[in-house]
Image 1 (cartoon, rainbow, N blue to C red):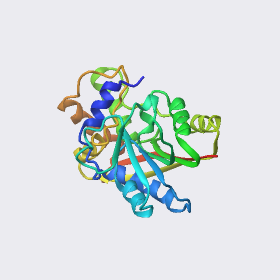
Image 2: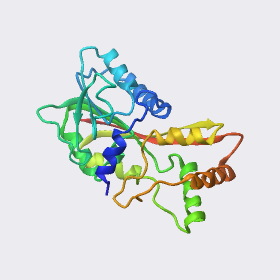
Image 3: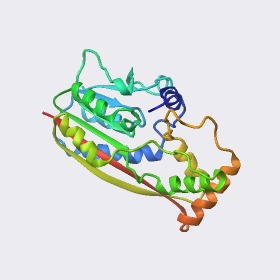
Image 4: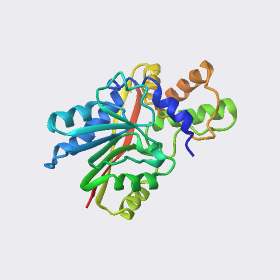
Length: 258
């Protein structure tokens, strides 16, 4: 289960909104998917505020559209965006008195404790012929760093801690979308690799994603400098090839409501 108090704390921290390279690269995939559509969207909901590229694209393409942005905690965004803001509980998504032609999300929907219920609620707040498009991490996302953390855990503690939030299997996501009557859902797997000359820069970029494990059994203290020294050694031992390479792997979900 997700620790909602901790998750709200993460969402309130400075995540370099609008400046995060990884989020911006993923958002370009959403834009590419929308760019081939001839459909006009009047009422749009951004579910999770991680970048501003998609919002800027939509407002430019559909100047008269109404675009609202929803997140678990809005304190970070009040002074950083002019978007209409809605604070939500991701496990119980309720938008009163309004439905949307487009709901899009960038690396946010995986933060729910109940993905099945979230898909059901998204379906309910979509208009007929509405589109849901979302990106979520795949099981292979940042695997070099995750595996290096597990090896470091084992070396320092004699056991491994949960380091990332569980990811749904593509087949399970597809079944849920079909169960709630989304029409012809598609799920594509995408990836890109970032090369870092300095390990700390890699860690900083991942840290600013604020996607660390958020379960109720999360450890209550942060790792010390010694941990990160060993982590760099493990990463370099197994994955270093002239640079510290980090693979960003994610799934793009695209589904229409009849």
